[in-house]
Length: 83
Image 1 (spheres, helix red, strand yellow):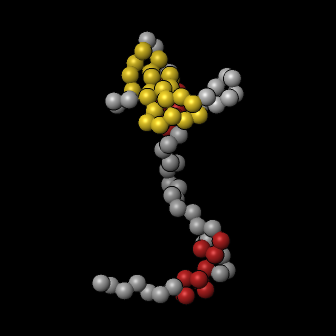
Image 2 (cartoon, helix red, strand yellow):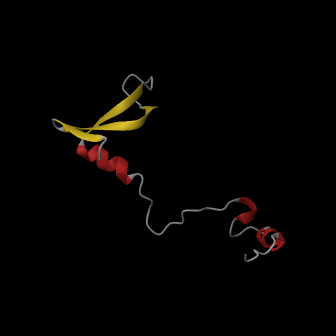
Image 3 (cartoon, helix red, strand yellow):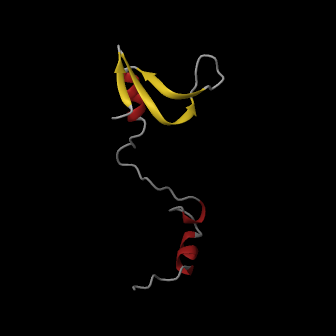
């Protein structure tokens, strides 16, 4: 909340690091502050929240759930030893 302040009708968010922000000039100028409307801020925050009932880890290749190699790969691993 230290990096967010209100100026008139817009909210100004001071970024921790400079980053390229798409703008009207298409050059991707480096910015350290973003001027957002309240709805734009909510939209950016909502994009960070994962969808409900979805897995956060996805396995591809031999570790994928339906892979024919999964049984062979997981049986080759050594069992964990308790310390």
